[in-house]
Image (cartoon, rainbow, N blue to C red):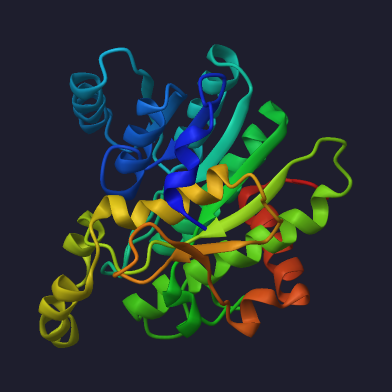
Length: 301
């Protein structure tokens, strides 16, 4: 699939909501969609940084239609307030890009006491999607951003928050990225009961140098590998191409998992392989039930 083929798609009638839109992949996606005349709603943890990102976009594209609102995915209350604003102030959403994420941070918890990476990367987006679900358009698309780190992931539903076992930052990150793919699969499985033609897909950026790496828990392995990442990594915009393709691919098929092509073919976007665990239907169902229980929802039950 050629990324350049997307440039002919008319987005002037589309409303696109992006989490984590003030930096990295989210900012590059917001800037691209704004340049194509879409109405962009950016969800940001810091409204100050959101306004700065908005100003940068408007500086380049003065006619852009972009709105940034505060949404802290580590807080149920913040997600609820954000969802209420979106539903009351904006038209139906055509594309929900669940992009925001944190990677391999020291142990921390969300406002509700969940391990931070699982809480933000998965549960925050699960809850936001549930709250906005009825505000999605007839042919809406939900895109969940995962990572190839999911290949090393394991889903411990008995102890997802590392209460019983020692906390390992990358293990927690890989689990959260596996959860993103399981969420996508189970969402599609449950969408057959919905009368609309909503499709869920996933994407990953490959190794793209974004601010995500700035917050990685420092250890000897990271210190050793960071220069290698710098040599192999693509730019933030290059890493965003699979996400944008997932949002716009006219030949979309549910459960597609988009990733970057070769670094030497920067216009290519490909379908990436998933681990067997990511396609485990029973595990996906169990994770869905756990997610509903933890967020006190009955989403698509």
